[in-house]
Image (cartoon, rainbow, N blue to C red; front, side):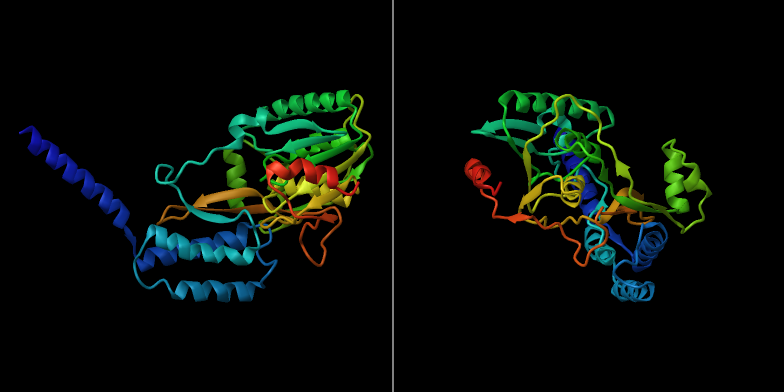
Length: 343
């Protein structure tokens, strides 16, 4: 009797899993989701026509939608529909499956903010490694500030006259962390990013659900771009700021707010950048993520509602280029690179 019950539940369980994996979306359901994406992208994204005109982007959407004529599994639809976001030029944009159990859990740097920054002395040079600016909440910013203050106390104690700040593997997080570092190495007013913010009913609803109210945003018309020009930032005062030479190392993995930090450094001539250009990220980019679910597939679509423009303005090539290009070595050879930098 027990074996029979066990066999029944085993068979039922396997059937359930198999059915979930084999679930297919009809052509009608996929096209409804596809139209929903088009409406969201055109009405909510910060600048959907930065690379294609509206007419050409519509034609691109139409060409993709034509191929949605046969039922597809959700994962297959996700791969196909993700192509719709490519013309945005938004490095944060993505369409993903919202099933945490089905996805491999990756470690989060936000779980160990106190270890995301480290310092060591390499001869007469100080080396500050900023692995990540990740946070779980605004409360983590206080932890970062204490860590940065403590590390610069060590830097002063070591009496180093040259300092390397390494963000070559930093994929971003809170831009405020980069600002905390800047106030220890640069003591003059500097120019910030400028920003444009797309007004939409969808994002206004998100803000309201979070309990956030911005009167200027609420009063703007749907589709209006709110413009925020670059401002002059006066660094916060710190006791005994670092006054020696600084070089910031960037690399292929540098991304998001780590790129913003390096861009502020370069555009305001705070220090030289060394290393390699980031692969994915750009100095001028989209940010402040908006996300919503597609009605039928329940895939999550996310993209930016703000466009951040670097202090130097829009250039011909939107790329962070090091002042001192060099191939980044492995960690083992890093001390040699640090000592060989063109100070």
